[in-house]
Length: 284
Image: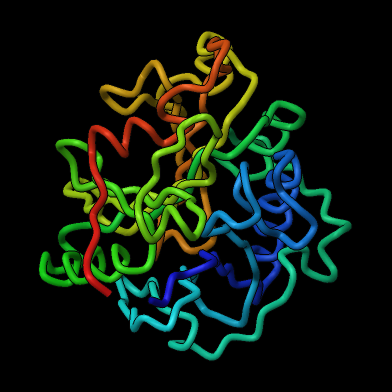
């Protein structure tokens, strides 16, 4: 079995606008306690729990998502590449690109990456998940099913009840071979696939945990800048952030409200997805 170890987001930095965006994005990520100096989010409960999530820049023309696996994955969705580690020849560099350490162009427009960083500085506590929304108009259902089948072979992939929103939950080797049965630990960062009937282009989603109350979040990101996804309005508030690749991909941040729970929730431990959704598992 070729279990995959890493999800890598790759962002181009071929011009000043792209480099500036990556600079503030990197500064935002550095505010999250679990983000290490290798630009990687590892599992919150065990170094052996996979996958981890990595952020890099590279010599690409548009953003990419790369799954570190030998399983053949090569899909282009509106010029956005979703592929395995062998599909592209990419020269990687650190997300902190040389020459952008001195950027001081703080744009105050509410939905810019620089403003998001300044609003959230000192207020991020974790990362729940990242993910990709794939428009149904950009990918045939047979190709979507093929992608999900492949991911179910190489990861702990679970249904989201009633929706085409399967999640990968970090798991150790034993849990990968059997299933997750331990729910006393926080399992982040997860990864979400969405087969989206509303989006007109792929969406990168980054779900960040904050120490901000619902009331304060609504004040910081009022309508129509921020919005609530129906059914999830008591969990997080969302905002689309401008990016240099608007024609290829949208970028959305889902900002979780400050937790009022005294213990880990069944979402944080993965129990809700495991028990209510169930594992999508295919023979390797």
